[in-house]
Image (tube, rainbow, N blue to C red; front, side, top):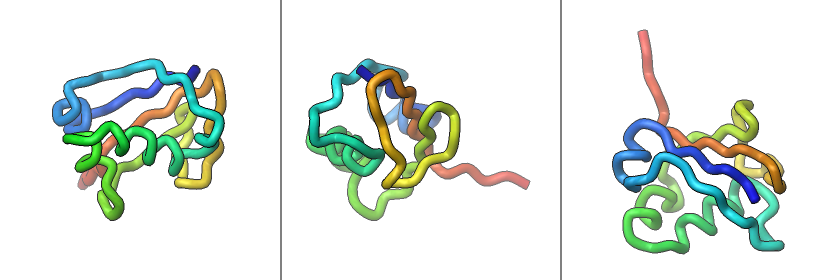
Length: 84
């Protein structure tokens, strides 16, 4: 089981702040988790569509699509941020 957190506009668009997900055996990295979430359809498919910029962190460390995800991890998704 992993904990998934959604921040800022993602939280608003998906209507969810956090959830616990049981990872299917074939889901082993951030890319796999994105595909799993996208398969829910609707706004999930839009938010996690190919080419959409959604940043990820695994256990509070910035992550790439090939970053492993396993039981007990915390994964956060958030939109890109700008500052000055």
